Image 1: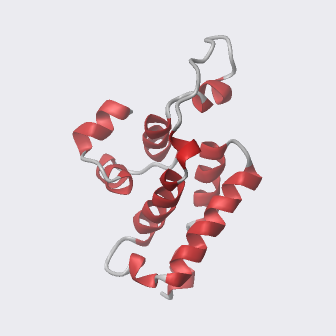
Image 2 (image 1 turned 180 degrees about the horizontal axis):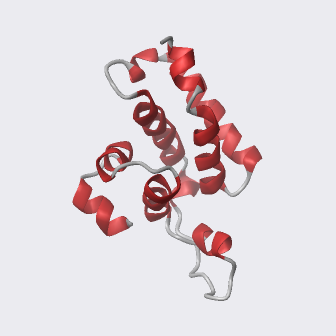
Length: 125
């Protein structure tokens, strides 16, 4: 399977994840585009690894490189819709939760994507 085929099958799901993190499809797509541009520059990111995990890891590195994405938001009101409350989780716990609950990654893969160990992931989730 070519690199483009390996990546293409995961793009709809990466876009969903990006939208959940950023809060809008437009913003999420901008991050996905940045990840794809980085992948074009360095295809070795996928070599010898599960393409899905490697793609999400690349996306996560780009997401976490933007300082504003690391800023915690104020505490949510319990009466807010769940989508809005999810947006108020601090960034790393939100990423961990979405990788496991929304994207269906195993704890090991989610921890690898975030660059942490499984016990740290469990604490975040």
